[in-house]
Image 1 (tube, rainbow, N blue to C red):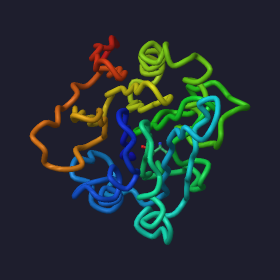
Image 2 (cartoon, rainbow, N blue to C red; image 1 turned 180 degrees about the vertical axis):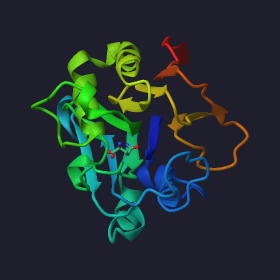
Image 3 (spheres, rainbow, N blue to C red; image 1 turned 180 degrees about the horizontal axis):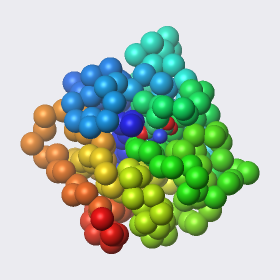
Length: 234
Ligand code: GLN
């Protein structure tokens, strides 16, 4: 299982979201506080964001197959990366999955950035020519992109119906919207005066963090945060 984080709000630095918080993704890569499955997240990392310098809402990504804490450049570059929409993740690969940069979230279809925190039986997912890697998360991302993000909740319920053991926490952003599901693992939200954070676990002890109940979808736009229950047989 992995840990992920999304930001939608005023432009802030990637460092302020990932590196500087006392329990940010960097610390979560070796010492997560709420991780239910796996001890640490050393099998890669990724940071994706939207920049006004890039036309057409194309996201930028920086991914690696090595532990975030071992990266020689992230700490010096991250303070200079500023964005109003960020999706970042640290990875703990499921047994049998490839460890390569293309298997690390965020995945993209050219518009959305998407991270999966969990696992799913690859046999229940359709083969995809557009999947970035052969791990379950990349295949699941391809399916979600194919169905469209407006159908995210329906897609998660459908996948869970054919793989009842699946854990399907998704976090996606497109520059002006964040979508996340809690399905089998932890998810928290923090409303700040300058924006909204969605994260697998709180990056600090701010009392404003709210736990998202399991089997719910969170839909964040600049004007609102909406919580939607997801149906599904247990
Ligand atoms: N199933 C995922 C993988 O191996 C595990 C990491 C995660 O939680 N996304 O890619």
